[in-house]
Image 1 (cartoon, rainbow, N blue to C red):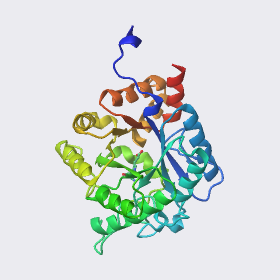
Image 2 (image 1 turned 135 degrees about the horizontal axis):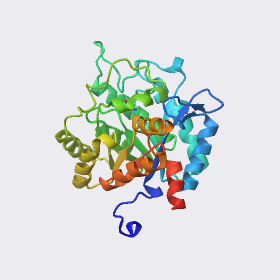
Image 3 (image 1 turned 180 degrees about the vertical axis):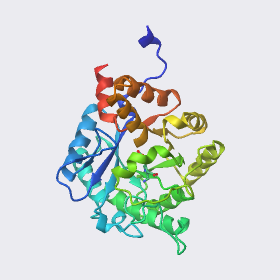
Image 4 (image 1 turned 90 degrees about the vertical axis):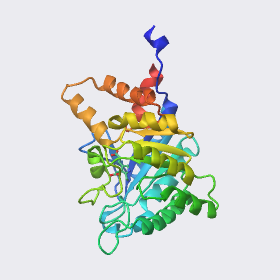
Amino acid sequence: MRRMVAQHRPHPADLILPAFVREGIDEPLPLGSMPGVVQHSRDSIRKAAVEAAEAGVAGIMLFGVPEEAKKDAVGSPGTDPEGILQVALRAVRAEVGDALVVMSDLCLDEVTDHGHCGVLDARGRVDNDATLARYAEMALAQAEAGAHVLGPSGMMDGQVGHVRRALDAAGHQDVALLAYTAKYASAFYGPFREAVNSSLTGDRKTYQQDPPNAREALRELAQDLAEGADMVMVKPGLPYLDILRQIADASPVPVASYQISGEYAMVEAAAERGWLDRERAIDETLTAFKRAGADMILTYWATEYARTLRRG
Ligand code: PBG
């Protein structure tokens, strides 16, 4: 009877798998702070994409990890057609075609030697408008490599509109934008820094949102919609379910929630110690996103969880 009356239930078609692809490796490299997650090689990412599609997962979000020596102040690997993210996009599209929605992270932190999400001015501060110009160039490189959806995640003001205009002008009207609408400066990104070999020292508090503030998330929503966002996201997940609910109630476009690296690590670490029931905890957290109004969920458990759902 509980099964019959359950109000909210995730479906494999709600799930998006975030995945890391590292340049210059032949075998996938396990991540110490995210047990079960790897940095993929060019071959293993194709396999992971096929497995996700076969499990019924809807999409994959790719992050590129270039060779250290290629990172520079402006993030050159982000616009090089041979940059690892573009290479991975082409490889995954060639493998799965349209069987998965293929998405890419549109941000500079993975490709800059200082690790910030933007380019810096002479005083070492992130330069918003100079960064927009780089995002436009990256967007074209990713669209040309075959991405269906771009995820601008750098939290620069005006990024959605700027990228939209650049895509349209180049004939990429069909490439959609998943706006990182409410992205908070969170401690829970910790393990991600290992996953992308981040070069960051310091924090992102001058461009990501402050955890005590809810109202500004709605302001970000209004701006992203006016700039042409096709979908919007709230991030992190669990600590921001209230924000997710408010955005879901206010948004006329689909809403995603991103269960980030630290949330994944928290459950895996506790489960490893026998402190909580891993499968139940995964199911409960993912169900909570649906209950709070998410249409789509980015989770590192996407493939495993989709299989579990299919088994019933
Ligand atoms: C920025 C980006 C980050 C994440 C996704 N895109 C890191 C950050 O903003 O510091 C975090 C994802 C996670 O922690 O799982 N490119």
